[in-house]
Image (cartoon, rainbow, N blue to C red):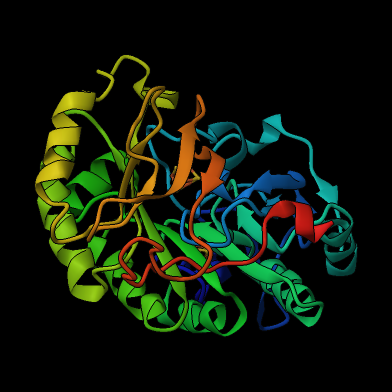
Amino acid sequence: MKCPYCEFRCELSTGHCRCQMYEEKDGQVVEKYPFQWTRCDAVDVEQIPFFHVHPDSRFLQLGGFNCNARCAYCINANVAIRPQEVFTNRLLPAQIVDRALELGCIGIHLGINEVTVNLPSALAVARAARAKGLLVGCSTNGYFTPEAAAMMAATMDLFNISLKSMSDQFLQEHTGLRSAAVVMRNIEYLASRAHVEVTTPIVQEGNEDEIPGIVDFLAAIDPEMAWHVFRLLPKHQMTNAIPPDVGQIAQLVEDTRKKLPFIYFGNFIGSTWLDTVCPDCGAVLIERLCISACGARFIQQNLPAQECPGCGRSIPVLRTPGRDNQQ
Ligand code: SF4
Ligand code: SF4
């Protein structure tokens, strides 16, 4: 029996399971470790990052372990690739939802590892969260099957999808994933059904030349989409790699901003690329500060509705009152 969740479609009846998270039992594909988590705490939405979702709100960050990819630069390798190093805790959906509500979160976000490798548990949490009026989002490498994409689209509201490259060769060499077309297909599918933001980690001398092509691809799907260009600091098996050149990437991004105005470039102190700026009049609508690792910290906003107060241009940011109003 083949696993239906990601495009590796492991043949579980032969005992092959790339992510180590599923097995065949009584003719069914089941999780080996249902509802086992490595992380369950509140984070700012800007840290996930979602920049076009309810600025200055909090989400309960729920993380599992293991992954279907093997990124040479994985920042969470201890959880995603070497999970024997971390503790796990069993929490059922109702407990997780209660915790989110207690902590003043407006939603639950599944991340840290790849959500596809514990999808049945993730979907059960998502259903319980939605029943209590919470939003549900996830961060994913996007390598799931159309069947899994349909389940996720029916159960979750927000997706941050990592488009690591549009080159199969790059993917195979740096991440262990095989086909960029799978990820691109899923971005297109989910963007027509839910809120999608895309993240691309830039590996120096690896994929920076792809920036114009990725912009063309995303702009054709939705020219208002938020794209996070992530200056990847060499980690895991790439600690000897060259850190990406901020000036070079900034220039590449600047050259394409007319096609895709909501590009964010971060993961380095001093980034001036994390604010949401009106593409028409240049007003700064949401100010953010780069913190040391990925994501950002909210500073302030001047966006009382979904349009620029200066010129009236529509701004594609989902909005709720600030955190103080959620307690
Ligand atoms: S989710 Fe895991 S078991 Fe299923 S196909 Fe992907 S790697 Fe294989
Ligand atoms: S997809 Fe993400 S979690 Fe998985 S190995 Fe790559 S960087 Fe790590």
